[in-house]
Length: 173
Image (cartoon, rainbow, N blue to C red; front, side, top):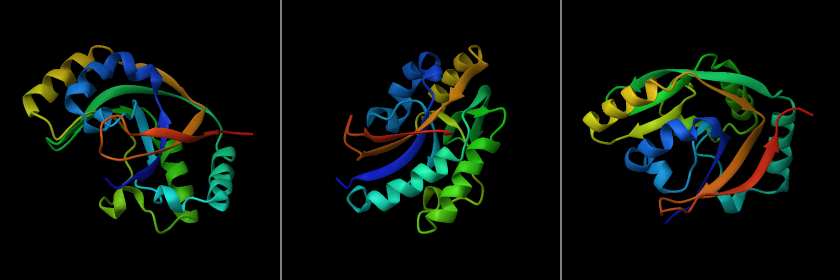
């Protein structure tokens, strides 16, 4: 299987509310990706990431200050994806935009979508009834407050539990 890389803000504060549902409804969870907000996926092929790329990533993330955020609403992308939305998506979008300036060959989601919509996935491409049930149950646990302090460069494939943290970048100086 082809390895990929991604840049994620881990959201461990959401794990207790969503992990039970993600295990059944989110293929990313099966691959070993924890609850997160995507900053950039797909990123470079893992074997192409060199020290100069890591330095550019470090520059972007040290220029972004740590911040608090809340996940307070359940939303949907059609009937395909149920997710939790941050109250203020701007800090996540800003990081993505900064990365797009430095890595224009790697647009978010391969350029498939016009807008960057930060989110924590609860379920994707699963049974709609099961996702609606999960949405209802997770909504009762909102809001979830969290603190973004780092971005993980993760690598892996579609194989179960294949994704691992290759490097962690702290936000701010």
